Length: 295
Image (cartoon, rainbow, N blue to C red):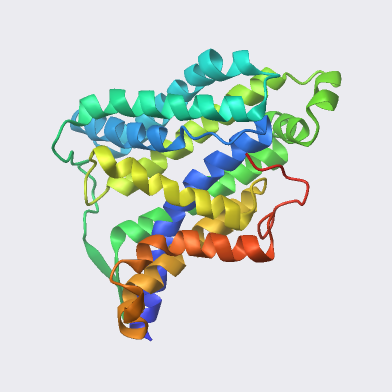
């Protein structure tokens, strides 16, 4: 039983990272109706930014500065590459985000080099005891920071003027324009928020193990998370990310004993298996709306 609980805590920690990335995907989708495939590169850029800034400012200030820096980069990308495409077919804009992802990763890889860059995080692989359970400190940090950010994000959408504007634009852009809401501002804000969340997720991905050129692949696990939760649901993104993390962790711990015939690395594909199973039952995700058009 102890091992099961520890596996679940580890899964919730890793799932928190998927949830942060999934939130970025959903925020941009709700504002623009386009899936941004640039999120993996922004996550990688955030992690690398932390690794450089931490050498100068210390870890915690570096995380904040990196988040703001990547949010600024996302704003520039939106203004230069995405805003001029307003009114064009959604799949064209989605393909452009693929190109942006490649370009950003090529630039960031030049700062990474061939070696693994350490982030100077205060947690590493240290462990703490929670009663009978022994867990890594970084998983608890992932859960705590994600809970705070999700709470702030939901309060922003619920109680602030800009959050209400983003909700209105997500519901009906033409009506929002008629009410004097700047849809361009909504687009920019959605990209900025997604960039900030991607940078924080990247920081957690790199803690303990460092950052290398292939770190961006982890961000692809956020795609099953948003499909499971629902492409247009912020709450669904959180639930989907945590679900993917827990399922993956349990398979890593027990699949070798219970189902060795699946192979040694089956846990790697479990996020996509879960996604396929959910699609078979609810094609619009657990919390998504039926009228969603998938890109």
